[in-house]
Length: 570
Image (cartoon, rainbow, N blue to C red; front, top):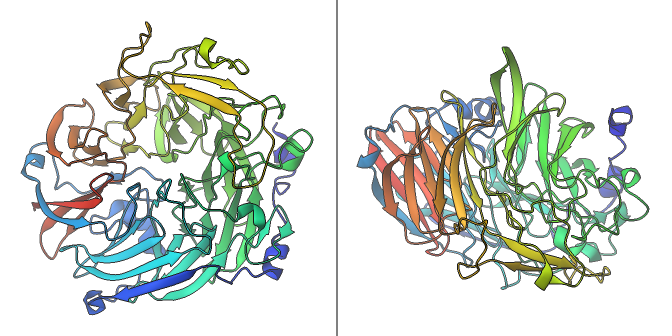
């Protein structure tokens, strides 16, 4: 038995310290602009609406399409027979700076439907979902700002009642009036860190210009509790996972590198952040949070398994107490963190109906576990190539290091997958690029400096690597219960696209080569595609507008800095 089962609250930090601190004080400034906000219909989003969104066709209220995160659209209006009739309805040029569009918009039903859309850095927009007209914007500027060296990967907001919520670059949460864009409250998650109050509003180890992945965990709201993650594993951050109530008051905080499960002081700068999205199982009232790589990347200074890094941890939503954890890569060396969200579903396993969670990994396999216990049910066939995968790197000798697949970017990185229930098909995207790497000793030197200790080199098409098939990426369909691959499409570029599957068996997916493709879900056959103009890493969504008798598909595009919305008459 895992030691945490005997003391499930041992990873909880002292939330009273947060309550005593300036948790409701905002370090940055907001700029709000309003357009024709009278277009926004008064529609009260209830907890029941959140439960039902995965079975409704007129909205998309949760990042993964439902609490279970299947990215499954139940409508029968977009089929393999008519998907080639899709046409571009409108295109919204990104009103904010930055080209890292990894977000999933939300759509609230109404006449007209309203879309809530995040782009980096820290920008939230309300749109008329029929026309793309911006009705209000709320742009938050953290006190430290955001570095130009990398755009913030805003992944999406959350909605409930008359409020829309978003994570911020400075470890906070903004609650914003859905109708006006005006601020309701701010939660300051950086006012206490490792049970140490900040001298000012933000703890000094969390106060730095952001680059790369950010605190853009789309908030998860369940029965009055809002949960969010953190980022920064590459800069010596200790990961934590927060729960607050809907008034912005702290409820619990989980240390995702539990001190007494690590050797010595290795937990102090140990990474394990929860920077991508999670999933919720309403049946067990459990949240399944993704955990990032440990720090530093090389493992000599952190003996042991290093829980919960490079895997998933399941927590009781009401208390934050430990349920289980599963590590894709215990004592990880390769930056094989596990950011891709789990998806939860029921399936027959050897004649028994079981509740399962599955996710693709940077390691290039899909892991399927029992939701109640975390017990491994199946590890899939490899959907990428595997070459020297678990080889440990040499020290200070990259020229003689072996080529390894997957590379540090995956396999599958933060991009979610979709799951088609009827055909039991999970559609995943991944990188298939070899890398060489070696390690060198490094000391933590403050949050402005990377805490990695690795030199890496990715292969190009000019490298003669006998075992490699020469393809940088892959898109695949597989059965997560049996682990069997159904189809593979090798691609020239590393793939970070997100999929969504419709009930009749169409899966939409954007590629790094600039195509937006409709696949036949179970076979991988191309049914329709659009030259979308640039790399696609955003999460496409589908919804139906019953007043207009129209089906819609929306997806954001990185290089083109646009949101494309397609339509199909019912």
